[in-house]
Length: 428
Image (cartoon, rainbow, N blue to C red):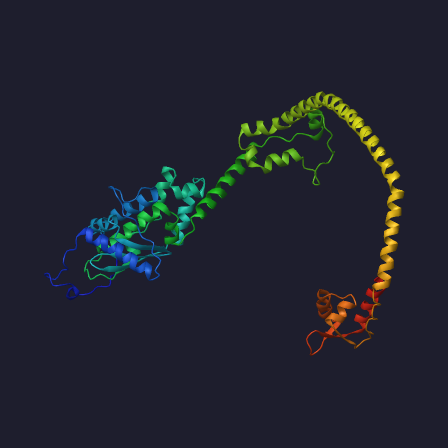
């Protein structure tokens, strides 16, 4: 049933071949100290919190796991000690993986437990999916354990359910206990039940199956059943002309390429609509309700429109009066400006002439710019004088218009550069 790594009793302290008893309070303190020590060393722990009360687990999946353990006589002798270890919070780390559970449990010392559980055989999983087909509403219901009695009986069945049998479980513990199932392994197995309370999907991970396949199988079966019922009870198609007469609308003679009536296609293709008589009645009355709603909206619009027109005329009259006042004010300002303009022009002309005379007398003549030709070398300040700022110099260098020389701030002009400089001179 199980295999264990064992060490001889010679490794125990001298007390009749057994270690000295460590009080529960001391073990709890040791567990807390060890957890802090491992965390400081960089180990990431996922402990199982201490449990109060008689029950180890409080949800369907956690309780079903513990019930499955206690059902087997192979485990019954050592399970009570394991419950005590778990409830006192001595499982300082527990990890559930596919086909494996690893834990660290504090006893006289810190012991490492490794439990391997066989993945669910493919045939057994397929049988479970078929038995649950069409009976599970959603994955949320599944993980919450909100299942019918039939589904619960199937997933917890000892021979064909999701929980492992004793022959599918192997375990090892680093403690020197001779027992096939020591209390540290028992605490680990109970810890799985507690973990399933908060992470029920871990059971599917442990057994190597995808729990969502139960929902997929259920959805496929449910759609097939609805489609079959819809095919047997589908409402007859309504001819296009009958629809036109009934609702007062124009319909094409051939609404679909294949000549199939649109109403018949929608009724057959949507099992939700045709699954029940109530659904068909709702589908049939929806156009009538829509037509009534449209008619009511038209009447309301007819009442509102005259009121809106009166309001619009009032606003338009107000705007006209305001516009007239604004136009008169603008005209008066324009007359004042026209009277002042000759004086302003005369003053401005006199000032411009005086300023021009001063500038002509004092301004030095601009030095002619450097001659440019392909191959001419120009400094940055010379380029700036020719109207080429530093930012443009860099873009010209990237474009190949200017070539770098061995000297910083000195560039060689290309034919394209000469053309661009001439254009800049022409614009200036």
